[in-house]
Length: 387
Ligand SMILES: *Cc1c(COP(=O)(O)O)cnc(C)c1O
Image 1 (cartoon, rainbow, N blue to C red):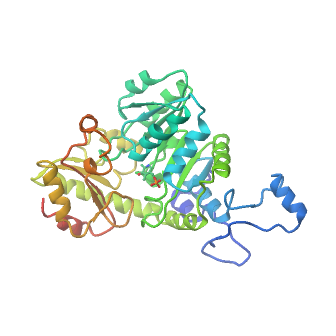
Image 2 (image 1 turned 180 degrees about the vertical axis):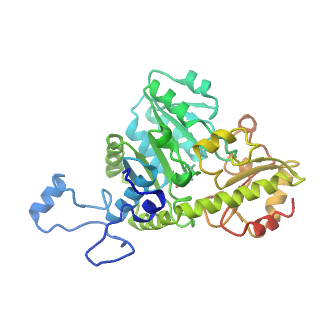
Image 3 (image 1 turned 90 degrees about the vertical axis):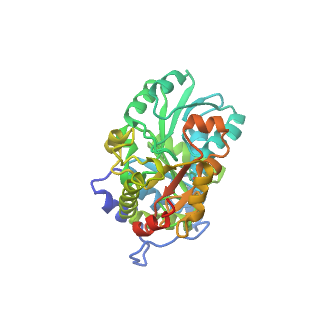
């Protein structure tokens, strides 16, 4: 869907479909099925010789508008929308791998992604190896003849580690594999993984694409030949996006760049402030010069993003005391919302890991993650005055 328009124009104009009513703001097509003008047209639609809509599990104009707009923003050939971010990951792996295939996955991925791979897909014969996101030699030694996919999130959650997408995509391609990047944290507004060599993009639209914490949704993006396999999977498996949610996300994309710029500016401000607090031991934010992958992050991303993590002096008690002292920031593990959220990864999102695994991944008991919302940053700092 690459066209010659700039990002902010595409976020507002790409993918629009107008009905004959002359609406300016795109309509919501809340219909499960579509009528045909005669039996001939019905037969042609089912035979796929006529491309029109049949049933909203297959296609729906509101969902198509979201898909075409997001594809334009990610500079991908095609986008397939899904019911959730998890179903995007499921559809991607089920469509692009077969029984007995092997995938290499970064240790720093979303918790449920690990559960999906380990508890469900391995039952169907998928083989999975976990490696460190940033250590290319670990990826290299994990490659097997049956390796099909490399799977990463960059920046990662919650430590905001950043991997070199170009080097990893080169290694994936030498290994006859595809590089899949979950671009949930940066969004296309601040990072275009396909430009750096990634093959497939995953989104949880639930996060920044919605931006206001209302709906669940997801997307898989990539080359047409691969995405047609994903679309066929959804037609049969049924984990397609609801037209209502698509309409919410489609509208959300119109302000994505403005919102991401604001999230990132506020997060940078907070990260700098946190670095100067006496009771903060360490701050993790790719926009800070102190971040170990700062230079790489600034090459790949146009900002440090909206997520800031930090270690408070002390242990779990001190971390929990800080969380419990907040009055404004929401205590929830969600992110990508206008409202700032605070979470203690060791006892929530990463509690499934053993103490040893958390120690190995660097997720300490005194670590706190804040997804910076769009409130005035002075009020957020005030809410953290316990520090
Ligand atoms: C939330 C999230 C997911 C899962 O998305 P859902 O919409 O909740 O199913 C996948 N990857 C990342 C990075 C996420 O933050």
